[in-house]
Image: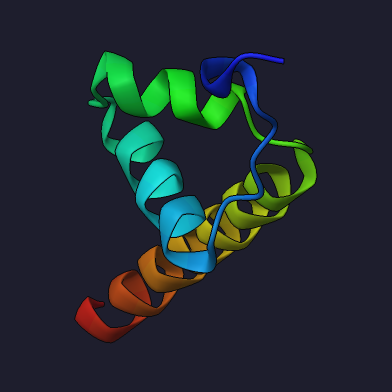
Length: 67
């Protein structure tokens, strides 16, 4: 197997960075390729769900605080 095609396990911070980049809509091609080489999609899925829930809860708290 080539070094470029090795399956990697992303770290917690790599998953956080990828999820935030996806939320904003900007990510380098190099990082995107690294994400797609990950062993499993679950860390990214769970990170995305947690981020989305935190974002929605944050918006609800912000709106209730302002009004």
